[in-house]
Image 1 (cartoon, rainbow, N blue to C red):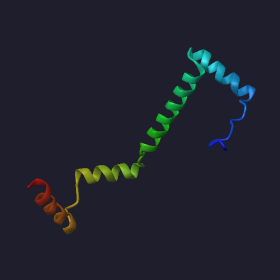
Image 2 (image 1 turned 30 degrees about the vertical axis):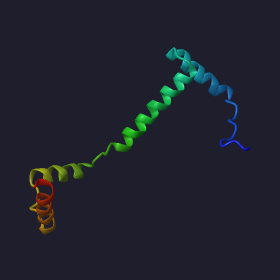
Image 3 (image 1 turned 180 degrees about the horizontal axis):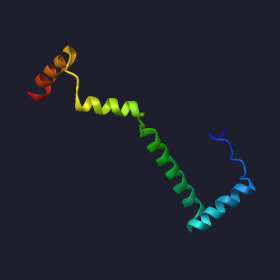
Image 4 (image 1 turned 90 degrees about the horizontal axis):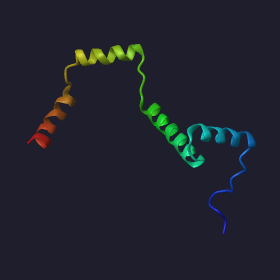
Amino acid sequence: MTPLTPQPEPVPHWLWQILSFGTIRSVSRLTDFLVHTVVEAAKRTVHESEFVELSRRDKVAFVEALLNPPTPNANLREAMERHAEVVVS
């Protein structure tokens, strides 16, 4: 039977030294150090993917729409009426 994942390559000596140093500095086991590091990287990746940075023009347009919203068009008025009938009543 073939394994689902290939056999991992040996860790290069330079990488093992870095990981060992990081483990010693954080006073934890190598597994704990690796898990903590991976979790922090995953959190950072999720945060960066959820964070939206607006340009100055976008910020101005957003605030302008909040302060001076456009009048509802026919589609929005119809949707508001349906909402009032279905949800509110």
